[in-house]
Each structure stands twice: as C-alpha cells, then as structure tokens.
Image 1 (spheres, one colour):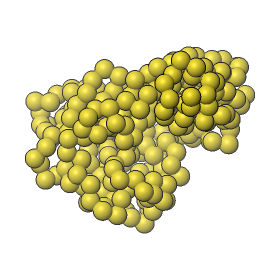
Image 2 (spheres, rainbow, N blue to C red):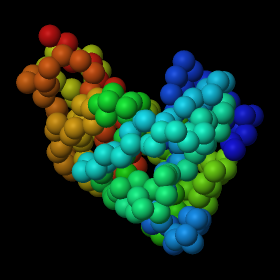
Image 3 (cartoon, one colour):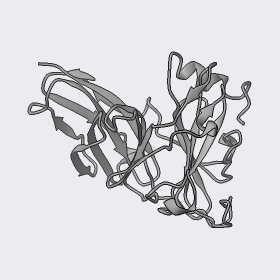
Image 4 (spheres, helix red, strand yellow):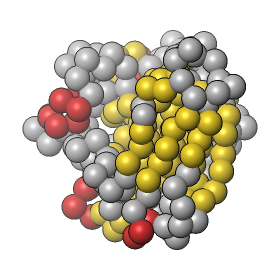
Length: 246
C-alpha cells in the first residue's frame, strides 16, 4: 500500500477526484515481479488518491485495440484510501480474474474508463521502455520512467532515468478555441515530436509527426466539447485538456 505521507501531493494534485488514477505500469517485465503462475508479464497499477474507498469493479481498461472490464463480485476491487491495485496485462484471461486481454505496447494509449467504456477516468500514452524499467506518476503530477519499478509500493520517483516534459518548456495556446491550437516546442525536444488529439472516449482523431517546427492543429471540423492533446518524444510525454467551442 502506498504511504499517505508520500502521496499527499498526489492527493492535492487530484483533489476532488472521485475515481482512481493510473499510477505505474511496465511493458517489458523480465524480473521485476511475477504473477501467481510465476510468469513475468506486463502489469498496470491503479491508485486510489481519495480519502475514501473506491470500488473499481466494472471499470474498463483499454488500449488502441482491446477493451477489458474489471470483474465484478470480488471484494478485492474495493480499494481503501491511498491504496493500489495490480492488474496483469498479459493477454491471458484464463489465468485469473485480474488478467487483462491485452499486453502493453509502445505508442498506444492506456485508458481507464467508467463501465460504459466511453467516459474516460484517466489516460496515458505508453512510451518505449527498456527491459525491467517502468513508467509512473510522481507527486508533482508528472509521468517519469523509473529505473527501479515499485509495483504495489510507493512510486520510486528518485530512480527517474528520464525527466518528463516540463510544462514550462512547451507553449500550447489557446487551450479553449474555436478553430486552431498552436504548439511551440523548445529546441532541446525537437528530435521528433508526435502530436495526437484524442476524444474523451479514447479515439485518436488526429496524429501528426513534427521535426523542428511549431505544429498547428486544426479543430475546425471537431464537435464542441473536451479533447485530450498528447505530445510525445522518444522518452517524454505530456498531456493537456483542450476545449472546443462553437
């Protein structure tokens, strides 16, 4: 269980949050942790940042191609305050209740939704990860690559091997718009930048790659509402909510 004192900043960052968050995951687990069958498989850690219990039964995890519902009727799905829960992303549902029907792949989105499979609770873009490192969220709300994965324990943010993109390094404007969004990328990140616009249901609506330029994203054909902008380089990912007006 994650310690309340360490994750108090996460609670503040997600103040008012009524659900769980994606906390950490590993897409190339060779020796970090094994499942009940002794297999070293991909895993996803969920975290309850609330000061009250949250039942995750019926919630849905999905990537770009698969949808998997967290089973109902098991008392383990009731997460106590500031606790976490591990799901095996091994494409082996026959191995147990909490074995999802997909594995984790780089450049895909990992999304947790309400039981309707459309209402997004939390999401993150999966980066390319070396063997036995993980990707997790830190108390400042930023995602980082961890040299020392920590499933079912306090996220080891001191073992960061690649810093997440700082919000001070990227200029995205306007975040409430009727037509276009502009992205100004600093020189140190211009190796190759992938920009994606994603609907709240998890569908990728626009995906473009840029090198050494300032991307412009048109929303003129989009319906009104909220969208998620994902900006990623080889080792960094940043997310922003965008509101489209009439």
